[in-house]
Image (tube, rainbow over the protein chains, first blue to last red):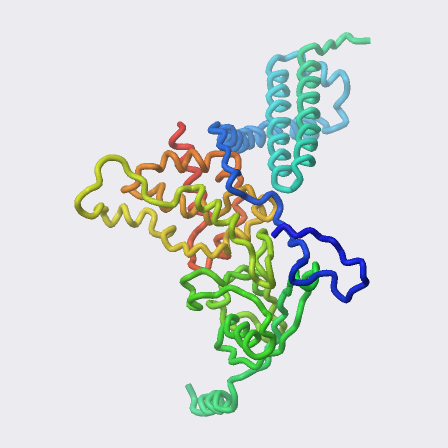
Length: 156
Length: 252
């Protein structure tokens, strides 16, 4: 199975023969005897459930958000600093935006995590793509949360 | 039916049942080349015969180096799963007339497993996943002196998943498995399902724990490729979802 590919220097018709077969193309990340290293956590179960539940809540939150921002009361033209300041004066809209931010970011991050798991073949690519994803997620969530809580309508 | 039509049909069948079919086979021989190539074979064949018969004619009459697996040749052993016209099927259960013999019939090895030669793939990762779900009866306590009895309803619960012949048509049709062989794959989950829902078995909890892991049932994207591919008509995706449901109802 493990063929050392020492291409014959002579310009032969074929580089390979019975004693020197071509390397077979291995399937990506194939399962071996050493594979099952059970983690015994429910992380994937909770992740799966979270996607379903947050999805349902997000339908209401995001559609409501779009309706208010873009359709009702003159549509997109009304949006300005004053409009945002007025909305965030109420704890209800603060909570709405905060929940929407957290759910959407975690929902999207978990979705992208599964996409990376499904499509990135090499261990290094997987690791760095996920690190990039987690960094971006944490940064956006923290920054958004900070803005919602420390928003000052009298800023000059 | 009018006699005229009957006469015509009879005349046609009397003439010659044979038609010329082109088989476009994916060839790979590591002792010759590192590249896999398509090779066309023209075969005189009765359209009521199967793709496996066509491969036999090629191997016996045209090119003896064509390599493929087959054992029983009647859809029971599960050796000859291959990708025929882009879909995973058993060569021994696919009739020529059902897959449009006017166009070349493409025959490839199943995807996601290492090709060793022509249509033969390395099934070891597939069977490793099968072994990892412990596909055997596990019980506690003393062995009974007679059979372990079970009601008809209890047997019915997992009847569908007992039909699996381990041909790997489902697992090698799964897009998640193509890119990540660490995923257990539909076949292993089907065979775990067969014991998880067996009233006589007592290790369902252990198997659920195995499939709860990161390469277990939660990686299923419900694309239904496996259900479409199964030559035994097992509702594979449904079985996977039943394992998911069992995991969730067990936790909450």
